[in-house]
Length: 93
Image 1 (cartoon, rainbow, N blue to C red):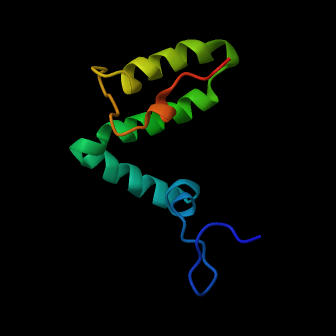
Image 2 (cartoon, helix red, strand yellow):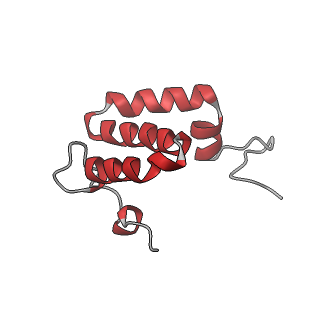
């Protein structure tokens, strides 16, 4: 099954492939985000989400609460106001 967007040579050109799956693309995109004042919080959020995914189960609730207050709460230190309400809603259950 085809994945992502492809060019004529069949190379995947999707954002995920270029900026998440490819280490150099990921590094360059993160540096771009960090260098633009309006996007710096997005870069920090990405890093923190990756750290959250690696943390122990016992640490997840505290880590999620820190993420929520820092990035998802208006007035938080790095509030990401560009995120939708659905993206920032606490998980149900």
